[in-house]
Structure formats: structure tokens, C-alpha cells
Image 1: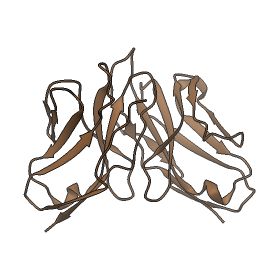
Image 2 (image 1 turned 90 degrees about the vertical axis):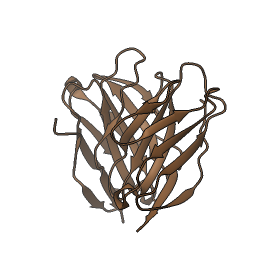
Image 3 (image 1 turned 60 degrees about the horizontal axis):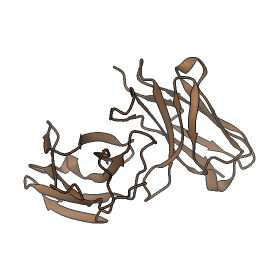
Image 4 (image 1 turned 90 degrees about the horizontal axis):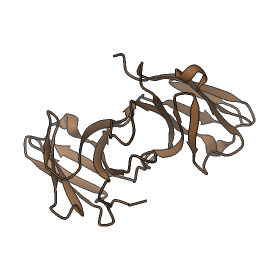
Length: 116
Length: 109
């Protein structure tokens, strides 16, 4: 078990550019979550997948954001036309969940995005 | 969704027990109580969870009130490494976890 890994750890980009982040969940975890966290706040939910299917999206996920999880393994989160307000830590988590069991989430250490 | 209420911050001395409270008066019968903590520059880390009975693991203990409207995370002997933000979250099993602002725990040597 190598844990949830995220790449890159840090990204600095200019306003208007597109960025893409990758998350590799713990193998055999069927659920994958994306959260965003700004300084001094708790993580805010963005979206989650069960296998390949995107089951829930937050209202925070504007049209400029898109997430994919092809083949139910790794996931990517793309932000188009970045804005300074997108600067945040983007966290990925995974879990193995069947029915309504309460498996804990395992988080990666995040990708810190700075938009200049 | 049921919400939780936690103090913004707490202080403790090293090697003393710490009791972190959480109120969740609108909890429903099937909601689990989860606790996570977040150390600086890291993602949140699962600590413990429970439904009705008190729970113990190697990291902490979780004491759940009989009416389930509150719970307490207990760190038996705080260390400097326990300084973190602690989040109390209700897990409905139907939706993704919703984090609040948590309790920032400071541990004094």
C-alpha cells in the first residue's frame, strides 16, 4: 500500500492558462474524491467517482473544471482558463466503499496551485 | 445534511490527555461520526469513527454520548506531533464527507 499519490506537488501558472493534476488512488479503491482547500479553511468537496462514474459534483465545480477517471483507476482534474481565485491546495482521496459502509478516506498530500 | 460544531482552537500540554468535543445535535440514526486530523502541509488523516458505542484504536478513543448528539475525541497522552487541525464529520454513507473548519490543537512542551 503506497498510499494516494498526487502529481505535481506544486504548480505555478499564469492567469488564463490551463492546468491538469493527476491522482493515483490506493489500488482496488473504488471511490475517488477531489477536494479543494484554501488557507485556514477545511477541505471543500468538489466531486467524486465510483469506478469510472462521476456520481456527485459540487456547485463549486464551475464549467472551467473537469475531472475524469478513465478505467476506474487514476484520475485527472483539469482547470481551464485559470483565475487567481483558483489558487488553493487540491486534495485527492480514495476509499473502498460498498453499499453504505463507512470506509475511511485516505488522502494524498495535495497539489498546491498558485495562479499569478 | 447534519452539521457539526467544534471549538475553533484548544491548547494542551505535552503528555497530558486531550478531550476534543464535537456537537452534532441533528445527527440521524444511521450517520457515523468520523474524525480526521490534518498536520501542517499534509492531507487529512483518518483518526477514528463510530456509530453508537465508544471506540478505541492505536491513535485515539472516541466517546459517543448516549443520545448521540455529541462526541469527544480523546488523545490519551498528547505529543508535539499531535498538534494539528481535528475535524469531526458525520458520514451518511450517501454523500461525500463535508468538512467544517475543525479544531486547531496546540500542544505545549
